[in-house]
Structures are given as C-alpha cells and as structure tokens.
Length: 150
Image 1 (cartoon, rainbow, N blue to C red):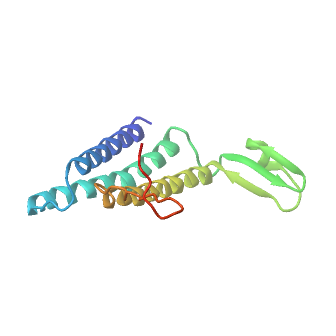
Image 2: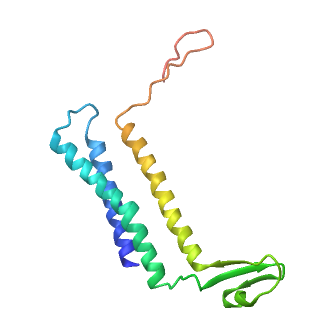
Image 3: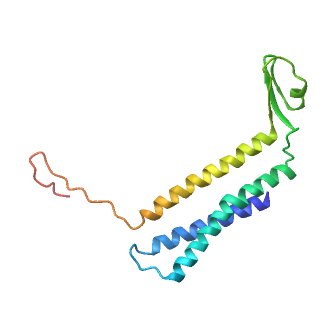
C-alpha cells in the first residue's frame, strides 16, 4: 500500500509543478530547446507514473497483501438466491454467476486508467486555456444605450 500511496504523491507533486509553471509562464513566451526537452521529459515521467507504476503497484498490492485471487469469491448469484464468500462455491440453481476478487481488482485497475485519462484531458484543457481572460460583455439597455456601471 505504501508504494501505491508514494506513487500517487509523486504524481500529485509533479502535476502541482506543471500547474505552477503554467501559471507563471506567459503565453507566447519563446521556448528554448532545453526548456522543451525538460518539459517533455517531465510529462513523460508523469505519464509513466500514472499509466505504468500506479496500476502495477495496485495490482501487486491486491495480489500479494490483499490476496485477491480468482479462487477467492466475493459473491454468487443464481435462481437459488445470492450467497457471499465461500458459500457461493456450493450454491445450486440455474444461471449461476460467480464474482471473484480478481475481477474486482481488475475493475479497480481499469478505473485507475479511466480516471487518469480523464485527468490528462482536463489538464490539457487547463494548459491550453492558461492566461486567457474572459471577454467583457457590454451591457445595453432596451433602447440600445450602454448601461452605466455603478
């Protein structure tokens, strides 16, 4: 669990650095080759953490410490009802569906990927919109005259 949390902490710190740099760097400032190289390496490292290390550490934690294996059942459902745990192995009835902990582990891993991809798109949007100001809206009365601000 420690490896998962440390990886997430490193990702959060890396994203905070990107947001800090983006808030201080004006749009249109010329980019040097060195700055581009450092920025690309930084983003690659964060993507490696987000899409490689964190899901791997989650799967290792679930397999080794939580023992979420294919033979450990969460629940079973059939026409005979619903049973939890090892009782689901012996349940009868037609249309039996068994859900094991390994499936839950994989669903959580897929959710990690979905959350990180959504966050990456959100960060792209923030980066592209940085430094922009909202356009001022001119208010006019029903007679076409400008409204005086109080």
